[in-house]
Every structure is written in structure tokens, then in C-alpha cells.
Length: 289
Ligand SMILES: Nc1ncnc2c1ncn2[C@@H]1O[C@H](COP(=O)(O)OP(=O)(O)OP(=O)(O)O)[C@@H](O)[C@H]1O
Ligand SMILES: [Mg+2]
Image (spheres, rainbow, N blue to C red):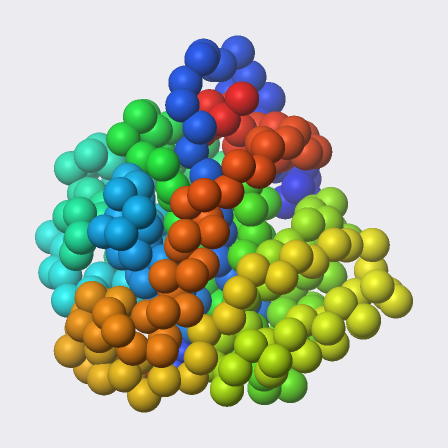
């Protein structure tokens, strides 16, 4: 069975679990190319939404093999997702309290055993995440780089796919390749684009335009412009301090970019729309409808 078929099967297993529950916005942050700023984007949007916008935010570190969100935020998790997947702990027992009250589900760094989840593991993980829904408004999924099946899995499962790209040509072509695979093999046709490490918004808009021009020509997808983050040396300084830049340097240019995007996310009244089978599935999981 192909990956999309597997997801559809898990979806069918979950049907019938619905109930009138709160909405949780589930946003997968992904990029194709590594090192373009996904983890920083996730950590800083989460921190800002939590502290300034008073939202309840959780991050799932879905970089199962090489997760480093905990390191970025100076946390030392005792347990991780592998303890859940191997039945030693439940998900509540591994949730870490991060800066600003954000909750973090840590992945096990370097644990090869869980880099390729089987179908039962996936269903188990999603069921347990479902139990936490009342406690969160936003769930960010920090995906690994690349286009492996697990990256695809988390992207397909999320309500929104936020693609992070930088102005480097390799980042733009990898972002395009990722959207192409998600569109052609998983019927995911809507994306948001965040352009990181730019000089200014004009540069971000130029990257957006470039991607849209190629996508319009060769793919049947829509890309919404989500925002930009300037290239700012304090981001690296904050990383060295193992803190979110929005916590360490709240008045910095990069932090202002995050604040702008967090406000838009917080105020957003976008309707929850039913997509294909798998989108439908995720909405059931997180009781968004
Ligand atoms: N806006 C920015 N300005 C300056 N430096 C940045 C910015 N965003 C990210 N960086 C630098 O890029 C590095 C990589 O960022 P990050 O770890 O968030 O990328 P990633 O996409 O999550 O990487 P991976 O694919 O390995 O998970 C950071 O440690 C930081 O030094
Ligand atoms: Mg990362």
C-alpha cells in the first residue's frame, strides 16, 4: 500500500470518534532543504503566541531522528516520543514545559528505531495527541528536512502546511520540489510561504513571486504569502544562548517579524474547511469540526 493509502486506512479507523470539541489549529512547518530556519520559526511563533497573544501552544518535534527543538530552547527532556511509541510512557508524561508556558513534545535525538514509524505506531501517536486537544489552541509540527515518508506524513496530517524558504536558490528549488511531491502524490494543494533570512519584505515578496510563477506553470497548487523574517545576527546569538530570539531580544528586527505573524495567526478567523480524506481525518483527530 502506498503512503497516502496507509494514511487513508488510519483515517477510516478513527471515524466515529467525533464530538463537539474546540478547534485546534495544526500547522506543519516544513522546507525541503535543511537549515533554513524551521525550528526557529516554530519556537518563536509559539513563544510569541503564548506570551503576547495568550494562546495555548504546543509543539510536536517531529524531526524524529534528529530533533533539536529542546536544545534550541535549553531544555533537557528526560523522556521522548520513543518512550510513548514503545509503550513505557503516555504522552502526558513526556510533555515538557518550555519558555512562556509553551508545551513541547520532544523527539528522541538520534533514535533510529523511531525514524520509520509503522502504521500502528502512527495510529497510536495520533490517538494520544488527540487526548491533549482541550489544552491547546495551536499545535505546531516542526518537521525534519527532506521529503521522506515521515515528513510527508506529518504534512498531510496537519491542517495547514507552512513552507519555510530562504532566498538561496537551493532553498527555493527544494521548497518547490516538496510542494510538487505533496501535490502530485498526496493531493495537498494549498500552502503558505514564510521567507526567512531576507533583507526586507521586498526580497521576501520576490521569492514568493518566483515560486508562484513556477508553480502556476507546472503545478495545480495555491500558495499564500504568510510573512517574512529578516536576517538578523541576534537570531544566532539567541541560538547560542539556547533561547528563543523573541525571549532574549524582544525588540530586535527578527522578533518584530515574528510578532507581526503571530498577531495575524491569533486574529485569523479563517474558516476550517474540509479537504480531502486525510484532511478530514486530521480534523476528526483534533476535533476541528
Ligand atoms: N532570520 C535569521 N537570521 C539569522 N540567522 C538565522 C535566521 N533564521 C535562522 N538562522 C540561523 O540558521 C540556523 C538554522 O536554523 P534552524 O535550526 O531553525 O533551521 P532548520 O530548518 O530547523 O534546520 P534543520 O533542517 O536542520 O531542522 C540557526 O541556528 C540560526 O543560526
Ligand atoms: Mg529544525
